[in-house]
Image 1 (tube, rainbow, N blue to C red):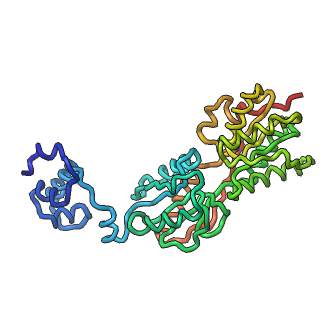
Image 2: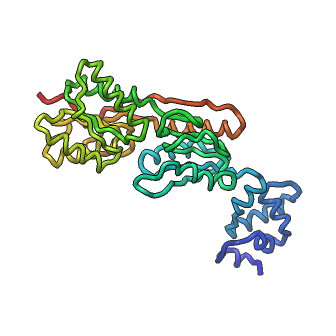
Image 3: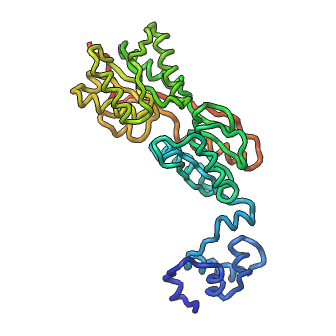
Length: 342
């Protein structure tokens, strides 16, 4: 029996038939209400919606998308939920308010190194029945042909394929290096990022260009791979800082790598920044909470996420979106850098 007492404690997933029975209307009437169609009296509409709320009834996303050919959902595909992608998600979420779209965050294969092309396989599962469009964070491959609109943030291979957005990695590296050079550092090491990411190559390029512009020779022995990961960066820093002619400063390709450098410096009894200056890249939230607080190059991650959503909404509306947007990076000076030791 459909009494109010029954409605207060649903014990199983409710069906549209349950809603109709509890509201005392036909299944067809409930269908009109939940799909926003006309022909339902206001009082009946309110009654049905009250029962829907009390029963916790939800329509099948897949079934409704097949009927309407739209899901009202945007997918965000990430290789893993780490600080970089989390900040992008915040920007996407803030920009999605009031658009009428819901967001579905989807992680790829949970592995240390997701296989190349995982985005294509994930999109094939989600496209059409679960999401209307997708934002893909650091895709491993170009996706020139997709069944739904796609915007890529910071692709592995750089701009190309779908609409893309990134920040100016070369100019950001120049800012980091100029800051260290102005502090009097001349022996500056670089902990690079992942070899398969264009952003890593661009940041190292900025490092080399800044040395050249300062009239300093490039020393390959001062460059180590950090893979954008704290543990790998720590191992690289241990090699660099154990040298008798150790660097006085380290430019790390991302903040997580910079944290690894600082950790090793402390282990070796080096003071940061008195004995060693360290600068990162990204400006994730932990950069302002670390000890010491990290000097870094800020990517406008929230803005990048918001711009990606705007680009995707334009494509979903059938409008032309910009093929590529590059946002400026900025220097954030905190406590991990200081003048070079005498």
